[in-house]
Length: 580
Image (tube, rainbow, N blue to C red; front, side):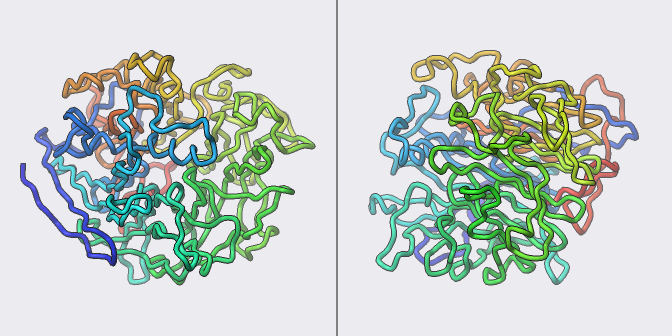
């Protein structure tokens, strides 16, 4: 294999990042062929791409703590300029345990799970995020961006990543007509909270990177040091939503870029917009600092979508006085930044009630609770689909802003009786209160006139005797569904492809893919649908659609590259895909 070393731009106080492309030896795939009547995919249409964890130079089946194994989740993915980009986070469960342990003494590090490989000293965690690119013509995976480092505030003899993860991406058309790929990062500020004497944080603010080519060495930072995005007290008048720790849900609407500036690892935060996103000073906040559309609660946004040229915003829970807030969905009228400019579409977790707060029994989410978070969105067939957690439910917003319940418990909501049109209850179980393992609708996508819905399945993390056992079970692994009409769902897998797909490389710890706990990215490409799974145990996995051996020729719809976006579907139900 041929190794190329490329330098990233040298930044003040930052160490260099190195990039290494690796050629995969399998034959290059061919684009899928068009059809006028596409069929839904099945598990047999997917195969595991060869490099688990993406890094063939340090693969998951080597001894020690290989780099590939530390790429826990495909936190974001997108098709740009004829190539697939995948952004990772690192040692997610190890790092998340550290963050939660700051406020919850029951969370001890390292977490008691035999399948995890957390170093005894948390300062030894290699948290350097990576951005990988797949070139289909040569079947090459190449690392095009890797986080720089600074001295670790907890131990100056060690280094700490500046970018812990790359969580969101979007394609933006610049004023000169060129397209750029933007990448929003998450910093390790959620755990490393030390400040300097002037009140600024020792860990730099999270980065926004952009490039017109996506090539290694071409990435430029958006300078947010003097803008509210820095999260430093001198630059932000918003409290208590500083420091900004990362970015989520980068969205394009009416020629402007919108981004959620997160106030914690979970991802909720305030929304900013810019018509010139490469210039940090152009970003402005559109959600009020004191966003109190529900009395006594701060509201933060978790997920956004552009629907019929209007920006829709879904909230995420904030814990004040140990009480969770059910989710809401708003649309923004674009005429101002006060509470009155945000209009409610779905209220109180989809329930009509005099008390919009959770009962005490829902401090830990249960299937009978109202969902606290809008986790995913997808426009399909001129409707906006909303995926929530926990529990995992699906809602559909109509062009007139009325809404339907697709997956969830029957209830009175929106002034009328709502029954799940799919007949499925929370977590895609029976339409009645029952324990379920699907806690999030993590990602959705529109492809070949089908709606695809992927979940996070907590049965993997909550498996019996996790501290000592590597035993897997049939209920482990993410669920993936498809729908040709937005209401009737077909099951593709309920085990992270575990029962239907064999690992071509015969790696013993991946033969049962129940370790693939969540469908974190679902990306349409001209080479088929690509599903990326979170696997914080042995490294993320990427699954690519293949032509089913029993399919007739021409069983797949055609995607055509366009200048305005990575591609647009030839069908009427799928919008332009310009975000990941």
